[in-house]
Image 1 (cartoon, protein in one colour):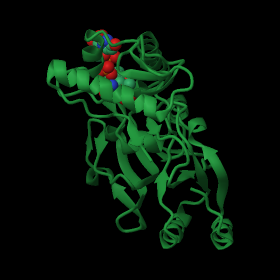
Image 2 (cartoon, helix red, strand yellow; image 1 turned 120 degrees about the vertical axis):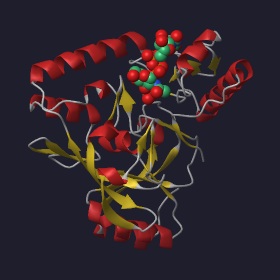
Image 3 (tube, rainbow, N blue to C red; image 1 turned 30 degrees about the vertical axis):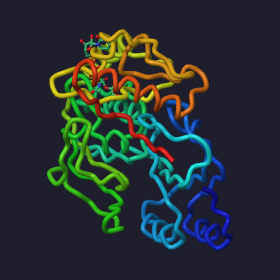
Image 4 (cartoon, helix red, strand yellow; image 1 turned 60 degrees about the vertical axis):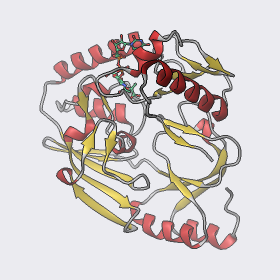
Length: 302
Ligand code: EPU
């Protein structure tokens, strides 16, 4: 979708929102898949209510993009614009055991920054690509921990009330790869309370998690992490592997040889290829195990 109305363009400039025409979502997602649309880069959280009002009044549909690392975007010209926060400097401010973090902060850099100040707890998420906002909205987790356990406060744009709101951690429910945020709420910043731990000990935890991840996941390849959630008490990766589906391909969309719940873009896969592969694997797992796998990856299909 293209914004060409000079009145809207002028209003965006007044709001300090940067308009990039024809951004390729393939360049903004770790899967390297996705069509084109206009990208609106937001420098001030406070401009969001006015911006959303402007878009609504002009029937411009929108989506909020974080780091694009858990996302499968449709092909071609997309029927909505994409909003993304510009990362401020500094993006992490520490106060004792509390870290105030902007949603646009890089998750890995935030973890290492806190570690250098003897604040730990988040070691399991090292190596998970993406922003803190993205990790927060889906309650990212690994190796027995989840980000939700450390959340004390969240500032967000609430789609339902069209206002900026601040929620205490206990007003939010964090479940396995799921939170009580609405799909169109936008994470703006978070206060995490992190346990004190000597830097050396945190580094040791980070090293162990990095090694485990390197040995079991296809880190150098274009992927969106795990495609399916694990069903209760079972492992999607193990089931897909047991069915002998590693290497199964549709075009350049391929079930990883290293971890069967990672589907990689081995070249120039389209969203159509990847969606066909997902549907095919889901069907085979359903047929053989009687289990309906649920997507872990977020799909924005036009
Ligand atoms: N397994 C196989 N074959 C495979 C993959 C896995 O047999 O191809 C087996 C493993 O040997 C292991 C079991 O399945 O016995 C579980 O595998 P793994 O330890 O790799 O964990 P997972 O359940 O597949 C989950 C998360 C990952 C997270 C890891 C580590 C989900 C959907 N996945 O994977 O998160 O990194 O644990 O904690 O919850 C993600 O969210 O995108 C993601 C990759």
